[in-house]
Image: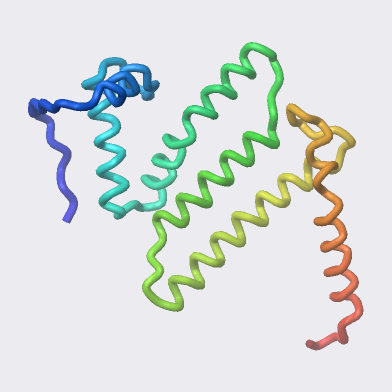
Length: 173
């Protein structure tokens, strides 16, 4: 049963330790300026987490919320420096999607487990493909242009071994 969000506000009073108060006062929460606003946003996030009844889109929004701090810092860095990292942007997006798949998954039987497995492998290989595209040039579109080439060797060796195995196996298997 889905509850309709309440449009009325209810007062809440609480005494909290000073260290938590100072932390809340300094905490940056998107769309929240006052402590009351922050508390509303944080309680909403906690409720969604506690309910656990995420559909994929809701879970993805929540995962993106969790990664807002590094995303915002990267956006600021890009604005200040004029540099962009496709590698890092794609990694953040991949991680958010993979976590959303996990959070929204129902794994109550074999078929559901197989569906989750399929989605996660598809997502992971899509990310691998995006990294391999970055390896097609000497310099990746990254803050460190050598980052992909530096970590590519093991993946290439595995891909070559797979290709050799596929070509050496008899047809019709």
